Length: 459
Image 1 (cartoon, rainbow, N blue to C red):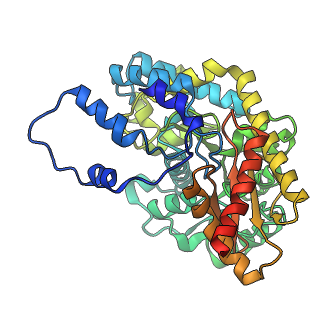
Image 2: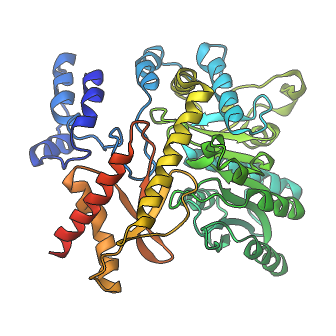
């Protein structure tokens, strides 16, 4: 069934609405009193679930940052479930393979990785929580306290800095950890949607004068809205000058470092204290598969371990359990899907995937700039293109409403899938290219579908 589904995806609609009868069945089933044979359950999956995918397996899916699943990851997923280990720790294949999978990810993106300085997570949201919690512990220890014992009571407020294009998971993590969104500083961006480092310096100076302690700056290595990469080297230097924790959100875009054309914009990434990345995005590992990497394993272990330090020997390669480096205790065998995907593609195959999709994004940007009815809103740095449809006959107010309505109309037509966003306060369209089988012909279909949907809306 899985093979048949994957083989048929490209020939079917990208997305279709769920039929009313199936919607009711999916969401309102009563709890069964008696069990049913597995064969019947598979029939339900075939008839009521497989016809309604999210759409991200299709070559003309350009929405959000959701990749098609890697074939190797799909193949080994049942085997991980069959083994069903807890990868909190212990001496078994799941734990040992995770060491390799994490090290491979660090090597792919060129991030320093001492043993123990990383673990797989459910995604970048959890990776961000782990990174910010570690930074918070460091900041409070520098004040002579331990946040695990006394919390934030009596401590001066701690400021976190991120760009106006930073991902919402950073705010969620700050709120969850008691840092408060009031002290989350939004740094303006420049014309290329990158963090304005001059504005960052001014915000830090203003906080120091007000008695607020700067704690962490989070840079983006490929934003979700436009794929922009912040000036990492400059931000790293500012973090060093002010003793800030330097975190990089590379959930989507950090693999762009494998494209020789964009590699220079990632200089400074290696200076980060922590890095969040999602193998289940550009790499295509079936969800869930996130990762957090650290320059030093001592910080996260100090933040999360419940094993007394006198029972640990960090100098003797005693890495301990993965549960000592994050909040999860029972942890699934994520490493098998990550390992299989990387091992199947190899570094060269992954680099080819990244280069291919970034080239397609630049081709789409060129098509937009050559058109008379589209505007490119930001440079195409990675594989995201932000743009706007502007039919010449429409005024500004109507164009705004039209761009808000286009994504849903395109999705319902079923031939392509894209999503909308807002840039500088106005409605925008965005296309993210992640599928290895997408072609330039698919890009033409996307633009044609936008035009057709716009005509239907205005009619």
